[in-house]
Every structure is written in structure tokens, then in C-alpha cells.
Length: 209
Ligand code: ATP
Image 1 (cartoon, helix red, strand yellow):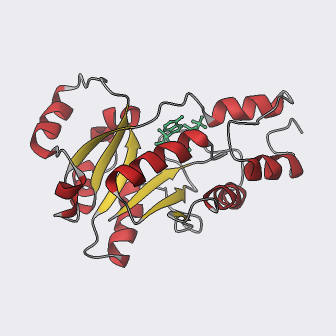
Image 2 (image 1 turned 90 degrees about the horizontal axis):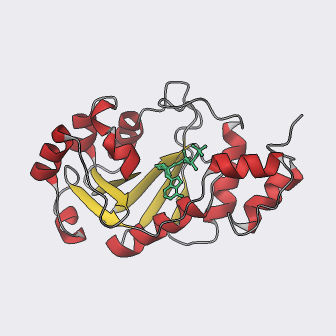
């Protein structure tokens, strides 16, 4: 069973890495694929070139044997819909259970995504959340009532289609805040791996031009 975490990763930080590690260990995932998106669909486009964002992901994931930098979206000029990313994984791994990792905020909006029920046919959803967080949305509650499972063993029985809520370490780190600090010349230490900070410093990323 593998995990997939898509994002703009502009830059990747410990909020991404620690939560992915929590899920990898809890569900005993063989690997977690970090997939930098070229053309983000639900947000403004990242200011940093996709190849550079991927180099930062590469530098960060090199520190864990189960983490993989996955460049499948980098060379695609279509919008980076999760559906297309998951179709690509499914073509490559027809029977492997796939766990699509997403935060609770993203999950609240899941039914407005491009073809959400097709996404659920292709993969399980692993919703990374804060213990005690509630879902208010009625339609989502209905979906959760139909699809939720309690543990990794239940996910392993099918290639996709279930929803698991996984508590993860809460780290209030965001790429937006990191870019702001870099712009202001503040230290980035302890927010993201040193190897990524080195790339940001060497290339003077996020500095006013
Ligand atoms: P930005 O601040 O530019 O919006 P971001 O820090 O949210 O970026 P993304 O690359 O957009 O980073 O996030 C990819 C995925 O990681 C999303 O599913 C997002 O919810 C999740 N994520 C981001 N930051 C954290 C965090 N601190 N803890 C847990 N998950 C996070």
C-alpha cells in the first residue's frame, strides 16, 4: 500500500514531512510519493518554477528511505487535477491500494473537486486531522457514514474506495509564512530541512527582485 501527497511545495516544509511520516508509520505504507503539482487548480499558481520546487522536494525526501519525489505532474501541461494524477498511478499499479493523503480543510471541499466519486474509485482518502475536529457538512457526513473505515487492515483489502481519519502531529507551518520570512530576510531554521534552506539561500528564492 502506498501514500500520495500532492502539493505545490513552494517550498516543502516540516508540516508536510512530519504529517506524511505520521501516516506512513501508522498505516505501514511502503512509500509516500510527494507529487509537486505544475498547474495548481484550486489556488493561485506558485511563483517558483516547477523544477525548482521539485529539487527542494528531492532534497527533503532524501532524508527518509520511504519518501519518494515523484515528477509525474511536472511535464504535464494540463491542469493538475488529483483525478488525473491518481489515474496515472492506477495505470502503473493496477491492484495496489493507493492512499491519497489530504488535510481536513481540503477534505471539507472534496465534493467540489473535479469528479470526486471517480477519485474515490481510484484510491482511498486518508484525511489527516486534529483529534476532535468535527465535520459539519451534511453531504460529506453521508459519504463518511458510507465509506469510513477504522484501520489500515481495512484499507489493504481494497485498492480504493474507503475513507480513514488519521490523527497527525499539528504543526502550524505554512509555505506562505516561510516565503514571507525569506522575503523579510528572517531565519527559516527549524521550519524546514536545512538542505532545502540551502537551496533557497543559494538561489535567493522568495527575495524581492
Ligand atoms: P501555501 O502556504 O503556499 O498555501 P502549504 O504550506 O499549504 O502552501 P501546499 O504545498 O499547498 O503547502 O500543501 C500540500 C498539502 O500539504 C496540502 O494537502 C496541505 O493541506 C498540506 N499541508 C500544508 N501544510 C501543512 C501542515 N503544517 N500540516 C499538515 N498538512 C499541511
